Amino acid sequence: MKSSTLQIIVPPEAAGQRADIFFANLPEISTRSAAQKILTLNAINKNRRLKEGEGFMLNIPAPAPLEAVAEDIPLQIIYEDADLLVIDKPRGLVVHPAAGHAAGTLVNALLFHCKLSGIGGVLRPGIVHRLDKDTSGLMVVAKNDAAHVALAEQLERREMHREYNALCVGAVKKDRLRIDLAIGRHPRDRKKMAVSCTRSRPAVTRIEVLERFKNHTLIAAYLETGRTHQIRVHMAHIGHPVLGDVTYGASRQRYEQAGQILHSVKIKFEHPTNGKELEFTSPLPEYFKEALQYAGGKV
Image (cartoon, rainbow, N blue to C red; front, side, top):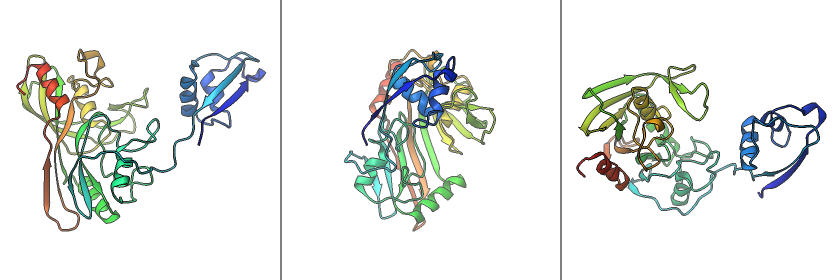
């Protein structure tokens, strides 16, 4: 579908109303989040107070597709059989279609390559667990529903081993620690997560220091749970945000790379069909090595 335009004249009863509230109540827009995106697109301040009779000509973007479509995007496949794939995801690749990323995602690439399980729905087929856009490394993907259920159950029972490396700001004092702090949506910023907020869910991350530098610490992080942004939120909460994380550690950053220095280095799980233990590792990518050089480490 193509984009469209919408011409609006502010009626008398809307005078003095905030722009985002007024536009969210229009049937052509209908939600506050959609209104804010459209206002941003059209360079209109969402807090602007409207005047009676003023006019707007809005550009309305085409709606996102209702399902993901196959796209010929290169994949780095570490392992593949009839039930699953193990992917080494590059930094900067979004895992599945969502607001602002209707195409060009890992799911679009996977659909071009093979059939996937349908449990994740039309926008997340095959996705057993996710990595953030700027987090690189290993992911397991299910090709059929039976494999998807079995892998998801391993995650739920905390039987899938997932290990990450991260370069964090500051000196982590303890060699090992276990962070057991519930995570939920940030009370003021819906795009962020936070510790100790309402409607939070249990979240546990185990940390092991691998190497200390002058102003940074290289850690291994082991996930016992899989909450959104879990490692990033936990490390920021204890005062050691992941280097490059502009969402949770911007005030502590003086690094040119925008994007967290976080890589999924190892994944281990039981094969959903034959029960064989599978283990895969991924070497640190170039962007991570550059960050270690920045921190003064040995590459």
